[in-house]
Length: 231
Image: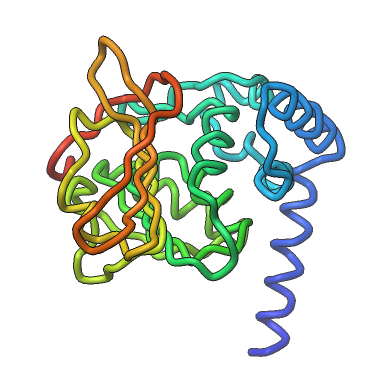
């Protein structure tokens, strides 16, 4: 059994090296330089993104554009976020090793992988069943091991709260109180807020049990945060 497990791990390593070629790594380095030039200063975030093979999270129709700084469609009418946006949200979140992070909206799993590369313990929830299943198929062979949930991200995961950090990857018309309640004192929540006419990136710090500090950080465009599960 031990030999079998070791051989399987070697197989995965060989496969990942084959699937993430020197060409891919070179393109990824250029993308990271581009993101850095746009104002991202956290080198740990940039290095984490430099280790994640974004092309393996893309629909095959768009894989040749994996290392352009753009969002692209994935299944269930959702998108894989623009790399700059991923870097921006992650920088605002201020992640460090061993922090307990709730990600609302697993999507392709790309942002999940970046959080894991930063050493966070990631709980990720997805309302679209197909995305929930696809993300596991993508992340598992790459040896990324978040804790997956299929459910209503609007409600968060109260049974597993509190969380040191909460990241929302879809735009809420207003920040759900359920998520604020699940944030530990001293914790940070990052969420795009607004409708189709305009969204602002909001950073919330829970300073005490009853006091939350809000700050605005630019305009973005995300798919809407919806209630309930979609089979």
